[in-house]
Each structure stands twice: as C-alpha cells, then as structure tokens.
Length: 336
Image (cartoon, rainbow, N blue to C red; front, side):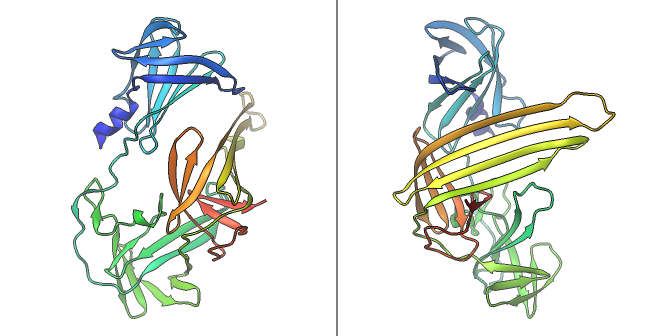
C-alpha cells in the first residue's frame, strides 16, 4: 500500500494540457518526459520531485531546475481511483495541467478473513444525526450502524456504497473491517464500547439516547433540480473562517452539473497586529450520473474520470425525482 502511495506521487510520463487557473483560458501544453525531464511548448528542461516526503500528503512537491520553468515550483497529485493526474504550476498566471491515465486504486482490504463471532440477529443500515454546532459537518453530523445477522456492525459512513461494509474482510492493517456486536435482552454491546440500552422503534432502533432511522436502500433514481451544500468553519485567534459551497444540478435524462466555491477570510481581533486576508476559488464540472447499486451513485465526468459515492434520502423516499434533501459523498444537499 505504501509503494502504491509513492507511485501515485511520482509524476507520470504523459501530455498534460493546461488551463489558466483564474480564468479557465487555454494554456500551454506541458509534458512529463522520461528521466525527470519535461517539455513546455516545445522547450525541454529538468525537474525534481519529493516523492518520499510527508507520507500523510497525497501530493509531491516539484521543483524545476532548468528549461523554461527554471526556479518555479509545482504540486503533483494522482487520484488512484480515477486515474486523474494533476500538475499545479505556480507560475504567474498559475497553471492547472491535467492528464487521464489508468486507475491505480489503493487496496481497500487485506489478505485473509475476519474471525467469526456469535450471530447477532440484526440487519440493515441505520443513521442518526445531530445538529452541527461547529460548522464542520455542514448542518448535520451523522452516525451510522450497518448490522449483519452474522454479528458484525459497520460504524462508519460508507464512501462508495454498502459494499464498503465487507464484514468478512480485513483492512490492509489486518484489523477487521467491522466490529462485533452482541445483543442481550434490552442492551447491546458494540466493539469495545460499554453496553448501551437497545430497543426497536417504528422507524428504526434506539441505542442509548440516540434514535437511528432505517436507511431505505435506493437502487433506481432519477433526480431533478438544484441541490446545495454549505459549510463554514470559524477561524481561531480572530474573526472570519472558511466557507465551502457545493451545488449539484441534476436532470432526469441522467446528466448533471456540479459547481463549487471556497472562500476564506481572516480578520485579526481588535488591537491585534496583522492584516486581513481574503481568498476565493471556484470550479464547475459536468457529466452523467446513475445509480449502480444500493445507495451507490456513479458520476462520469466530461474529462473521462469516474467516481462512486454513497448516498441516501434522509426523508425516507426512495424514488422521488425531487426529494427535499440528499446525503451524498459525505455532504448534506438541500433542494434550492
């Protein structure tokens, strides 16, 4: 898994068409050549890449030592799931250069199978939310429990769909994908947590003081209209913060438009030294969408990349073309 991470941070030999980041105007053609060399509009040079640097980062720092970009820096990143390669070059104006290669996904599971546990008798996905008071969750903070009758429970939000809860498998680090649960009378024990009260309700289950509503599996769905997600994280040590807005426009013919906006501001508290900082950025994507499995939506972007994301309709509807809200890819979207 670590070797794959290093490989994804190593600039791949390919042609990278560029655009000007601020305007979207067509830029020059950038090429990565063998032997740590590159070509920009027909002129070659050399570069170095810090592939083995900070292991917690998905990108590598690039420095150009000769040629038309001498003295400039860049970030390189490759999405293993989609194959999208991006080189962000810090010239003036800044260039964003992209190329699409073969996906190199990181392993989701390790070798072997999870040990058997006592059967639990519960099944299905349940979700519970709390109102977000920090702004980090974008309105609601969700918790999940996905029970299997075999005595395992998946307690995270799936990334791509219900198949993420492969409770018979191990993670790459050797730990089970799911935790064990044990139900005894009116109590339930999940993993290493202390026992909590448990009972079924008309819409789901109640664990301790939390009500979890059963998530209906959605297998066929065509959406219509605009949906907006917004979050704001306050800055510490002053006033301001970071605002993130995402908007999906869905059409029943299976096409979509996605736009995004990020704005950051910081204003020092009265009497503190320092200046105000304001930064903004935005992007727009188009493509097609379809439901490919229970609570799993696939997006095919115009640049050829594909991505799958977990989703469900919090109001319990399963076939409405215009639900009031959608939980999608870790964000809450509300109909506009």
